Structure formats: C-alpha cells, structure tokens
Image (cartoon, rainbow, N blue to C red; front, side, top):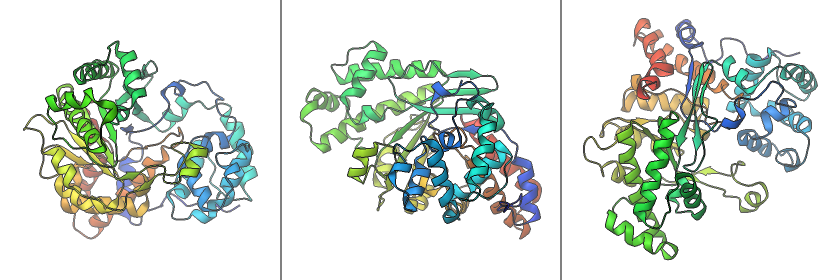
Length: 443
C-alpha cells in the first residue's frame, strides 16, 4: 500500500524543520470558522462514518468532486455517506497540488493514524478502519486532539448563543455577523427585534436593537465582528439622511440601500471600538453564480467565485471615514488576489489595520506563500495573524499544520540564505502562529 508524504512536507531545509519543531504543537486560536456551536458538545459516535464526517457540509470537497466529473447525486444528492466517500476517494489522485489533497491525507494521519494514499483501491480499508475509530470520537475530542484553544463561530445578531462558552480547555466565542442587517433584509430585522425585545420602526430603533444584541454577544465572550459583501458600502449618509431612507425602506434604489447600509456599518464600527471588538471584512466575492445549481443545492454549496476586478477606492473611503481613535482593529480579506498588494500597502496608512490570512480559494500552497511574500515586502511579516479554518468541518484543523509548514519553509529559506538569524526566526514563527492573534484579541 503506497504511503503518503512524510514529515518533511514543504520543509525543504534543516532550518525549516527546526522552525517547524518550534510551532507544530502550539495551541490553535481559530478566529474565524463556521462550526455549528450546537454540535461542539457532541457525544462520541456522532458520525456514522468518514463520509458523514468529511462530506456532509464541506463545499470545498463538493467543488473538487464536481471538477472531477462526479455526479451531483454523490455530492449533495441522495447517495449514502459511504457511497459519497468512495467517490471522493476515487478522485483524490487527480487533486495533487489542491490543498484538499494535503488536508485530507493529514487528517487521516492525525485523527486515525492512517498513512496510506487515498484512492479507489484504499477506500475500503480507510472506510472500515475509520468507522471503528469514529465510534469513540466526539467533536470535542476532535478539537482537543488538535489543541484548539479558542474558536470563534459566525453568528447572526438574532442568535441565542446558548451553546457558547468554556468547554474544558476550549473557549467557544460568538462572532457578530450582521450581514442580513446591512442587506436590509426583513427576516434579519425580525430576528433582531425578537432577540433584543426592541420594536424596529426607525433607524434609531434598529441601532438600539443592534447595541443590545452586541452587548449580549460581548457577555458571551465575543471578541470579533465579521462582514461579508462584494464591496464596502457608501459611508456618506449622515444620521438624518439614514432616517429618511429608513422611512422609505421598501422603495429604495440600489444606491440608496447602499447608503443606508453604509451608515449602519459606520455606526457599528464605532460601537466595536467602544467594546474592544476586532472588525473583520471579507469581500470581492460573487455569490451563487450558477443559478440552476443554487436553486437545487442552496447557498454555501460551492457556487461562489472571486470577483474579476478590484477597486481599492471604497475600502479607503470606509477607513478614512473615522477620526483618530474611532476605528477598532480591522482585518481585511479579499478573495481576489489582485487586491493583495494594494490592500497590504493600504494597511500602512491607517493604524491597526491587518491583512487577514490567505482566504478561501487562496489558502493554497502558492496562495499562502504569495501572501507571506507580499506582506513581508509591503508591510511587516512579524505582525501577521497566522491561520484560521473558515471551515464547517470539525476535522478541518489540519489547515493549521498546512500553514505552519509553509510558513516555516518560507522563513527557513531566508535563514538558509543568511538573510535572517535562526533565533529571531523562531520568535517570528511563534508570534505568527500564536502570539500575535492572542495579543490582538486580548485572550
């Protein structure tokens, strides 16, 4: 049986391996994920099989299977989890270079001690061996095995947050994500009103309800907010203009809706600053581009793509809308890699603005190396915030090992060339992998 890659993956020099030894077992601070907090306190045996663990909600894997011609019946369709896993295993040899190739094999080794390659021939062996192991594995156990110390889930203002809190050595904290509010969605308004006990008839009412919700989030350990959109909204509307727009909510033009959303975003940003909340912004995304597939499979099913263009103007306009001391720490993520250089340059023009980890389609070997290179050249690599999962999978923390190996290979190469001292490099990689984000979030 063919054995998968060894311990030297991406660690091409003795210095890289020494740096990796310094960070490989550091605890994990996952400051952006999509784990279901209600499922964290699960009992052992929650997963039927590895197909259930890997393929029930992972649009990364679904997309890869579509790329390899697998019928939708075995992806989001009615096929059983065993059949879905066998189909996924059969396409794995086609995925060399894709991060899923490395993540999947690393998960097999870390969780189950299985070191063989994943393919059609080994699928039966892997399925049977993992089925036995999964009977004694819980989601909490998975997180403990990866040494996860802090996980920030993604939650709407109307969510009750009853499943957040301390779980042994793990802290599960909510992230305030009011995307529906900024889209002026009626259902989001209704959920917020119900949760806050505040009737929303004016823009001032809405902001009061948001404050109540935000304070509830803070009481549950919230350290972060998150916003996802195509681009930053227009911040030019003052409060009086926002009230006039809100009074005519059902008849607004797209530009007017953008202005009202921009006013609400500025308001929230100032409230984040008062509460020590770090604001995250994910943008340059085109959602659900295949309308037929979206209608059949729903959102978050693998039909989102990066935008084809990027204009930094709106990002600058947003950051520049605040007086000194009004803006919280900000983390910027663009799905379009063409934005990386201008955004990294921009981070030096405003205090406490950070470039987030290589995100989504960019959390690849080349994407991460490219991000590290650009940040080191246009900003300060030593302030980098490391990695996160952005995942719905409880086994997905292999992404941290993937990142740490790439980081140590990148920095180790500079040490080998005499550009950097080994001791300084060891401090640097520890800071990037753990200390920087822990200090930013005051954990």
